[in-house]
Amino acid sequence: MPHNETSPDQTDVVDELFAIARKAQKAFEEGANQARYDRAALAAAWALMQPDRNAELAAMAVETTGLGNVADKITKNHRKTLGLLRDIKGKKTHGVIRELPEKGITEIARPIGVIGAVVPSTNPVATPTNNIVNALKCGNAIILSPSPKGAAACEKLLGYIHDEFDKVGVDRNLVQMVPSPSSKAKTQRLMELADLLVVTGSQNNVHRAYSSGTPAVGVGAGNVTSIIDETADLKQAAEKIAASKTFDNATSCSSENGLVVVDEVYDAFVAELKKAGGRVLDNENAAKLKSALFPDGHLNPQMLAKDIDVIIDTSDVTVENRESCRFLVLPSEGIGLKFPESGEKLSLVVTLYRARDFDHAKQLATQIMDYQGAGHSIGFHSSNDDRARQLGLDLPTCRVIVNQAHCFATGGSFENGLPFSLSMGCGSWGGNSIDSNVNYAHFMNTTRIVRPIQEDMPELDDIFSGYWRDAGK
Image (cartoon, rainbow, N blue to C red; front, side, top):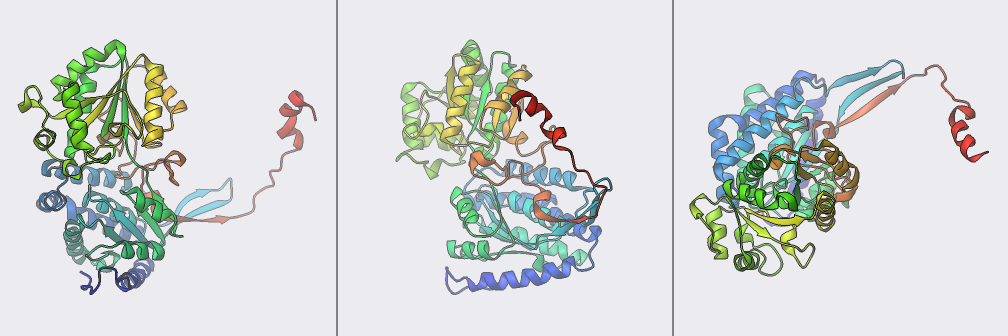
């Protein structure tokens, strides 16, 4: 690993890392073929997916960050990486990738160079692995800047990746990380040097990346709302929401934070939610939970991504059948700054809203997203596909996740067509440059050879005839 520093804000080490990465990337690209890129990507993936290492890294991530739980992190590390490998298998990222003879165009994939990746403490193993595999698949080098809490797990991961590289003759310097202790100065320097930034996590980091002068792929804030209408299979909806909400103690930005239920099925759905492990709090206990979760209007870090017993004890709430409780449900009628429960909670707490009907549910969901989470995604439990289309047409969202456990579906699933990712672009609504899941296509440049073709120039009448007919010339 890189040498020790003498100052927390020392940035010359980043310059040194970058020079090493640039040299390694140039050698990686020179005389390359698809097999070389694929082999490096598979080596990095296997470094995590080997079961013993996965278990060790998952345990280390929970121990050092205090976020999530080990069993679910093992599952996340495995499934997210396996899904990514499925997505990139057979994909061409080297040389000629497409011929368009009718346009006279040949498209050639080219590496971007050295990627700078800022990764969050919520997923200190799965997210960097995803970025590393995508970067190598496209012929790049990558330098990670982990969060302080996630640095130890990230460093251990890189050690295993380098071991795998040694087996197949891949240069270790293709994958590096900014050494601890982390600092904003070092991250900022990486942002300035990199050829492309990929930033997940803190919105402050995303904004800094966009203003760094370096091309950046940043993602927006999550705050998922799920609508349950009167046509939904209530039992399945409750079970899917419970599975999603409780996975890895709600560390995912795709975990449900708000449920908007139409009045006609509200009571019946609440009953199903209870069967699935949710506990709807009365006014007194709801006030206790809100006070503990937002002691000064901001999230209590002692409750983030903790086990349900910690949530219950810290907030001193009383719940029925505590032994079968999996998450808490906080009824609310308010949205916005004065109602922090309407925002992202990163905990085993979900806010519950009652809507008069579907149109009212749409209004509430829009208000929630306008407050926080615009562009990210919305869940929808219904048997009415026309309404799903309405949500896609009317709401400020890049994804409408229909009848699925939201945190498993939004970032790609073996049961839907989205690419596997841990970073979801939120479009202009979320202040992002992309509106899709971050995937390998964001890690390469495309060069186009453009040849002359037969002239194809329309007459003005071909373009304006309809307009002239309606408006005159």
